[in-house]
Image (tube, rainbow, N blue to C red; front, side, top):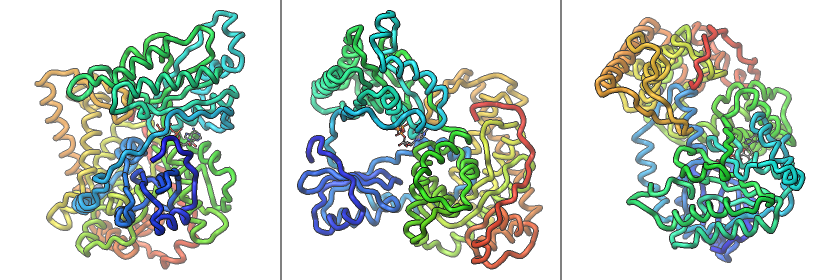
Length: 599
Ligand SMILES: Nc1ncnc2c1ncn2[C@@H]1O[C@H](COP(=O)(O)OP(=O)(O)OP(=O)(O)O)[C@@H](O)[C@H]1O
Ligand SMILES: [Zn+2]
């Protein structure tokens, strides 16, 4: 590869031609992402976008052509990790299927070192401004001061005002940390110099430190400016915490960074912004006054924020009349900016592929499913038995979601496999802030309902409920240890959650003996809910059969279709049902009680 070769964006077709002609040397893809980056034999770098994330067979095909393929872990992994337990009740995971696929592909064997370009300098101020950043109002407010400073540093210096040198943006992946930092530079009309923490992670002692020095030399030449370091945790990890003790190279790099931050003269107008989703693993020295002493948290957007983000990214995209972005925002809890941008892009591709001129609501809904779960695997042929099990499992989730008073109702239930799931039931959930005890219990019951249905109908159970159990158990445990919702344990915080944005991990605050009691109580709580939901399904056995059989016939049921099947009404023929779909009727549900936060 070449160092810092400009990475031009090419058409996917061009890429395929290059591929056929043997001109492609290396590619890097991110699992679940449509972006493909690579290097041609002549050393030039390129970027292209596939219509859907390349699957293993495709990657194997490329490898067979002598291309060296590297697959990086999915970007949205964390965002999804936190979304799963909250949004998707009822993944039936084909564990065996999944593992066998992954075991076979193994593209990571052929990893190669993709030469990282060093700091990228945008000498022109970026065009992005605060109005391109939706939501994040508090963050923008806090950053205004920095914008003012960069616009007119001497005024601040004359006043002897102390301006933060370093600002740490903290938040889960894809919430727009980079986007926001770029907007600060855009607002202030100053150059934006970016680097990623991983650019500095090198094998050879001294290289990383030299790059840090380089970065700040560049910055000084362009001041006033913003230096942005993405993934600062890659260099900023606590010292001495490396595997097997110290890592000289990394420590030297970190030390160099500290030296540089201390070293600006008082009147240098450089603001260093950095982003991380793991503030907890940063070396405390980085957070000291005069370094990254200002932290700004950016959270996943709420429904309003999601709608605004959708509006921003829908600009310039032709939307059909039936498109309701507010409704789409409601249906995408847990989605971050990057997911929403991706969603609109996927929808545009879907419409374009079918030769339509406008993006419809159906495109958007399909795109949302794709972003969440990966593209539908239409070609995956399940055995009749697997299909039946999946249908009953998902029907179980759906019935529980429908009949339990405090559950969320059904938005959609399907046995079309997607991503790792063989089917799923998507609840009609609109917000995730208010969780009452009753709602949580129903939620646990809904999660367990898939397995309960399997047990009732097949008198046997499968491995497909792994994720359901993880979800149910986590909720049960948190009800007891964090939310004070178990009579035996009272309103005591047994566990304090560390704010890692990675699902958090618990710092235990209780004795061994309490730990045992908690485990026992979790087990009892889950067992109770399992029995409760199993009794419900037994009572509604007829409806269960009806829903499962209809699923086997139609594969997917929308909210209204599900409602009709439950009531025993006939469905329209599949085609018409699709064409003239009425807006879904919102079945009013009991509004959940007091704000519990952190749910
Ligand atoms: N609040 C927002 N308003 C508008 N667009 C957004 C917003 N948040 C994210 N996006 C879009 O999502 C894309 C990804 O965001 P960005 O790369 O800034 O996220 P990030 O938090 O830096 O993620 P990572 O930690 O993975 O680098 C951006 O290109 C931007 O267009
Ligand atoms: Zn399930």
